[in-house]
Length: 347
Ligand SMILES: [Zn+2]
Image (cartoon, rainbow, N blue to C red; front, side):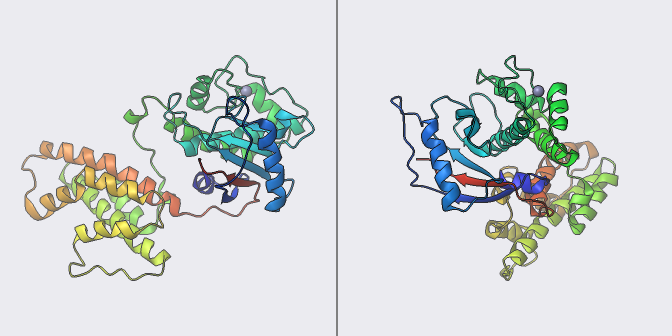
């Protein structure tokens, strides 16, 4: 969640995360965490970790809470308590949505931040959307309604007006909607048939942008296929060089310094780049290095149409490599910190 708000930066910033493995919270007779104990715990944590009152403090819970809410603020429990003391549920909701946990937690944070704003503007009706309109602020009484809300990724007209009247500025709404759009794509039940989102040129580092540009201008056929291979080569080598540079380490490519296979192996050391292990798994499962070596050092198919499946494979893999490897290298621009994440490890 932290990297999502870092990548799509704006007024909401995840300031720090704290692991709290031995946190004691009381259970009720059904074994579910009581709201009173959850919010009392957050009050204590605020003091222990010196979290200012205006900063949101969110406790991530891996176990069911007594009212089965996805997320709530202490003000939902007792009106006089803070609407910035939050819990977020990190239970398994895969029976409702394919959205990964990071996306769900981000969604819950945004809901609570907007609710806090509405509350401060005098709107206390948490259950405004009993009928499940698909709005970000749907109450989702029936748990399945969360899927519709996530797949819509929108804020309804009434809520938008209310939010603006309550002081939501364009920067906040822009960040919320951009993150919601990313979550929406990750929440589609048929999402595997949608190509990975394309990262704009401006977000790519220079060498990678150059090879991507070549891919963009080459028409179908041999030249385009070769441009895709070069782009793959560049993506791998850039990730390895950058990953080692970030940690101040020597490359140490051994006795085969030019072999692409050696560079791909080196990706294993590049733990500083988010999502790099997914990239390696993808490269291996799709046998991209073999394809590149076979066609560059071996034989290219005689007929252009025989290149089509190989081109399609690269077109499927490369945007994901860009997505995993490079977007997250970019640091968030400076902005005001508003959120602290206090995580409770799953017991
Ligand atoms: Zn709404």
